[in-house]
Image (tube, rainbow, N blue to C red; front, side):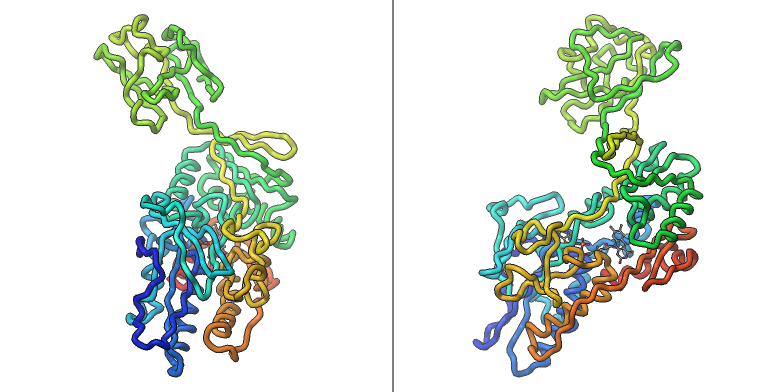
Amino acid sequence: MSNNNTKIPQSISKKNESEKIHRFVIAGGSYAAISAIKVLGNDILPRMIADKSSNFKIAITVIAPNREAYWNVAAVRIISEVDLLETNTKQLFYPLVDTFKQYFPPEYLHGLNIIQGKVISVDPETNTVSYIRLDDNGPANDDFNFLGQELFYDSLILATGASSSSAAFKLNGTSEESKSALRELHNSAHAAQSIAIIGGGGVGVELAGELGYKYGKTKKITLFTELGRALQYLKPKISEKAIKRLEELGVETVVNHRAVSIVRDDDSYEIQSPNTEEEHPHEYNNDITASKTHKSTSNELKPLTSTSTNGRLHKLIHLHHGNTHGDNGTFNESSSDNSSQGSLDTESSTLDNSTHNYNHDLSKFPTYHKKPSRTTITFQDGSKATYDCCIPATGNTPNTQYLPDGTLDSEGYVLADSYLRMLNDNPNKNIYVIGDLLSGGRETMADISNSQILSLKATLIHDVVDSSYPLKKYVISPPSYLVPISKKGGVGTMNGFTVPSVVVTMMKGRDFRMEESHKYLE
Ligand SMILES: Cc1cc2nc3c(=O)[nH]c(=O)nc-3n(C[C@H](O)[C@H](O)[C@H](O)COP(=O)(O)OP(=O)(O)OC[C@H]3O[C@@H](n4cnc5c(N)ncnc54)[C@H](O)[C@@H]3O)c2cc1C
C-alpha cells in the first residue's frame, strides 16, 4: 500500500514515443472496486497485450480510505459471536494490495498504485479527481494534504458505494473502524438487559434473529420497523413467517414505528447508598448538577463533580473503598480525559476536605456505579421507548458527496446510462459507475457480481480497447434474498420462488458464507 504517491505513475517505460499509457482511476475499495480490478486484470490488460499493433500500457490507481476489504455479509453473526474477528479474520478481511496484485503479471505491477485516501471532487472537463490522503487515524498529517491532491485519469470508475447506519455493517471508513464498531455493538448487547433494533429490512431481521437466538430467553429484544411489516420487499406470507420465527426466539416485532431520534444517555448513574433504608438505587441523568458549595454527608445522594485541569466538568462514578491515606482519595471516572483521572480537584469538588476526613470508614459513603448507558428512541407519533442498547439498521446513504448535484438522483445515487457510464456531466464519456452508489441498482453484492460487472466489462472493452466489441445493457438482477433468522432457520426468495427455511440455513445461515468470501474479495 503506497501512502505517499501524489503523482500519476510515470514508471512505465517510454522508450517508444508512440507508446501510450491509459490511466484508470478507481474510487472505492470494496466489492465493486475489486470486481472492476478483476475486469482490468483479466479482460482489459490481456487484450492490450495481445494487440501487438498497439503500444498501449495501463496504469491503475485505486483510492480508498480502507486498506482491507470487509466481508460484511457476516456482520450480524460477528456482533453475536465477536470471537470470529480473531478466529476467522482471514475470511472476513482481505488486504486490498494482496487481492489486487494477483490480477496483474509481475511486469505490470509497477503500474498499480493504491492510495489510502478519499476522493473529494471530480472535474469531468479536465479528467481530474481530487483526493485527500488518509492514514488509519484520519487525514494524513503532512503539508498541503488538506488542500487535496490531483490525479489525471483517462477512465474513472466510481465504486464508492453507500455508508450504513454503523461501520459494523459496512466500510464507512477504515476496516479498523468496522472492527471497533462490531466489538462495541457486541459489548453493548452483551451488557444490556433490553435491546432495540431499529429497521425491519434484511439486516435488522437477521440481527434480531442472531440476538434472539443468543439472548431471547434472558433479555428483552424488540425489532422496530417503520412499515406495516418487516421485510417489505418479500411476499407478506414470508414476512409473517419471519416475524413468527423471531417471536419463537423471544423477539417482539413492533410495526408502524418510525424512529425519528435516538439519544444515548452516557451519564447515567446508579448510586448505592450505605443507608440501608434506601431500598432502590437512584438514577441520575444528564440534567443533574451538584452544587459547588454543597457539603456532602454520607447519607445524601448527590453526584460528585470535579473539574479537570482543562476546566471541564466530570461526574465521578465510583469512590474506591478502603482509602486510608488521608489524601484526597482516588476516583475512577468515565471521562477519557487523562488529566483528571485519579485525582480530585478539591477547590471545585463537592467533596470538601474541611468537612470530610478521609481516615473515616469509607463504607459510609455512597458508591457511584456507572450504569450501562440507556438510549431513548423517539418515534414519529411522539411516543418514546428507552433501552439499554439500541442498534440502528436503517439503510444506506450513498457516498457521492464529491460529485456535482446534476449527476445524482433525488436520493443522491449516481445516474448512469444502460451501459454504466455516468449519465450527466460526463463530456468525455469516460466516467463509469458500479456498485451500491448506482441509481436504480439492487444494492446487493449479488447484483454487482451477477449483472453490473458484465455490463461494465463490455463497456470498458468497447470504450478503451476495441470499439467493435458489443455493449451489454445492465439489467437489474431478479430479487433474491436469503434472510437467516439465527443458525436454525430463515426465510428467503430466489427468482420468485420461496426458499425453504432449511435451505436458507444451508446456503447462508450456517456461517454467513464466510467460506465463499474469497470468491468476491480475493
Ligand atoms: C449487513 C449487510 C449484509 C449484507 N449481506 C448481503 C448478502 O448476503 N448478499 C448480497 O448480495 N448483498 C449483501 N449486502 C449488500 C452488500 O454489502 C453491498 O451491496 C456491497 O457492500 C456493495 O459494495 P460496493 O463496493 O458497491 O460498496 P461498499 O461496500 O459500500 O464500499 C464502498 C467503498 O468505497 C469507499 N469509499 C467511500 N467513500 C469514498 C470516497 N469518497 N473516496 C474513495 N473511496 C470511498 C469505502 O471505504 C468502501 O471501500 C449486505 C449489506 C449489509 C449492510
